[in-house]
Image (cartoon, rainbow, N blue to C red; front, side):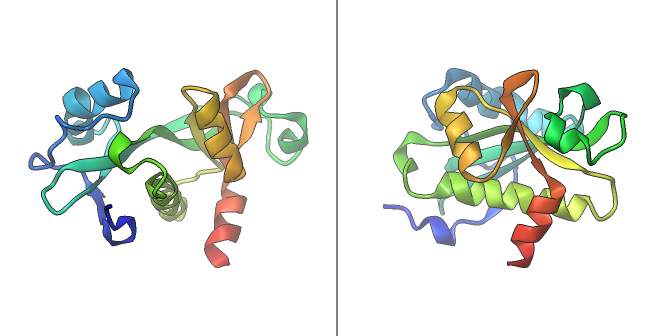
Length: 170
């Protein structure tokens, strides 16, 4: 059993062993193996990994800038923002290797991503964290942490930055 609490989450590097990673979703595996480092270096998306002491990647997430069209927001939330595209940071991918599923690494990666988004929001406007869930299990994972579905895309969820700020203070 891996000590999830002891894992550091760092920007992806060449020495991170990605080829063994298997989360059960081939598109997520393939992204990590083929594109994550390249996109990280070319400012397309920043990828952060949790790796064991042998540099084997056990989980990762990617962040990219984004926006949401005002009309996509649920009516209850839309009342609180101007009628313009809403600045966001997209958690473009988040995946955990099958070998450590159920040990809390997904939650740890999400918390790290939200902390980085919160830090970014102090210098660049960010109103929401955004994520595109790949399946219903992922939707439930994000809803557990307070994410809400967009009005016109229920597999795309968001979390207001105010919620992230409030959670960081508690």
